[in-house]
Image (cartoon, rainbow over all chains, first blue to last red; front, side, top):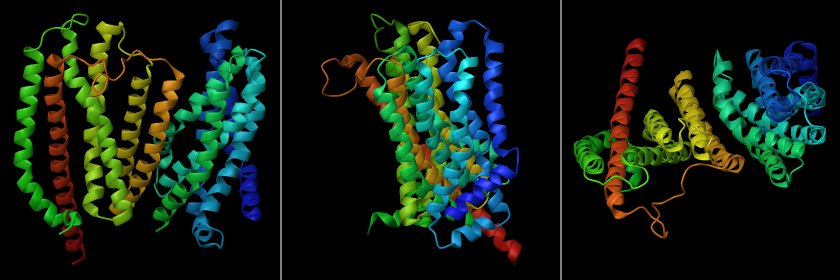
Length: 218
Length: 242
């Protein structure tokens, strides 16, 4: 299992483009929004939580189809399916690898972009915490979506259509945590719900994703 | 004699062929009575004027949009557990009907909202939840269309339907939490003090029954088409082999 995780991480690092692209996209979005909205600090500060969360979500979406597609094409997914570890664990590990190369760097990068977007100082800690709690859900849901479309020739666009509605609750609660945190309001409820979504999705979705993979590999 | 006999496509075709004319007749009867009664023989509301009459399309369509998804959920579960093809095909047949009901609810809601709330669209919890439901329907239909092998497509869409239901429910509460709405609360429940008056309630009830029947009729017709299309496909592939 450790070998599989390391292999996925190495592939993501060395194949280039894959995960750096997501970060670059996140950066570009945060630069473009002030140019489009205008440099006025108050407006930017108010929309910053939402923009940062939408940016993180879209950046995550960019690299989703790489979770299974390459392994499916070269046949290693068939080998993984017949390997002694259960397919559910394979899905969970691949989602974890995806999170380590997209979700985690996004979380680290986000405060810097918060400066660009004039996020109120009280919001930084909550931004990092909400992304830390929320991005695992994005990776796991994305792995499920990628498992659904893995057999299709041009699944990328369909993948976005399938996954985006599933991302809605995570986005709402994540942005709500940052917004409330920036304004100094009580945020225990959205924080708990966000963590709940991540935990619930990580616990249950690997089973659904593995079922979808089995159908696609049949 | 068990209910699973109807999972036999031949049996289903026979029964539905018998039931379809009745369903069509009852649908037309209920919809004509309900809509004519609602549009021409109810008084105007004291606050909302004549725009209140759009309720006879809006509420039943919204109810059926959700019920169609629930029906798809049940048929998907039956497909996963017992693998009856009619069940999967019924889910496939119901999706575009449900999508249409969703779009009708959104469109009539916009027409109603403009004079009442002064806006075509508001990020109200129910509106947002319906928008997300529309996306789910689009995704579901697109996945059916994208997969070539019908059994694979049925499996994948059934899994999507199950997961989607959980997330649709979650989104419903998420958007509730996210924003306070303009929609009034439920006024059709039987145990509430504040219900709409009988003058509006009776024709609305007829309309709701009419929409349920309309849904049943359309799904029966579309399922029959799907079964025939499947038979045709089987015949064609057999010919290609021979």
